[in-house]
Amino acid sequence: MFGKKKQATARIETLIAAGTRIDGNVFVAGGLHLEGTIIGNVTADPNVKSVLSIAPKGVVEGMVDVARVIVHGEVRGDISARDKVELGPTARVSGNVSYGVIEMAAGAVIQGRLVSSAGQPVPAPQGA
View 1 (spheres, one colour):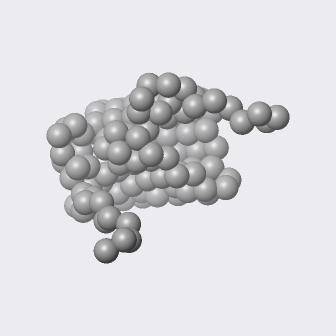
View 2: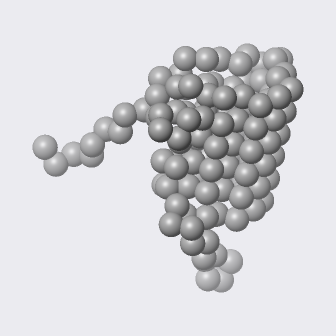
View 3: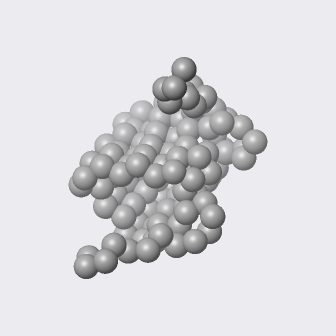
């Protein structure tokens, strides 16, 4: 009754395996788990609940525009997640991160700016 509401999330339906490299843009319909490499942009329909999950050895070299993004690997480009960005302890992001909600584990690295969904940059902590 008073617990957290469970958010509907897209099911992982597609797997790009380790050792697989895609040169070109990828359109996500539902859920995608990446263990290989995508050299290109990853996008999804903004009206559909979609998720991109990047494994520790997974790499995206391009822009990511998906409702929910879970990173344990590497993104070399900007991330735009309308719903949520989750950065695991092995996450490496070289680019700006725009998000609705962000969850970041100790050890995750972002080389770029954090921008809230309201469009206002998140201020750096004082004394950092």
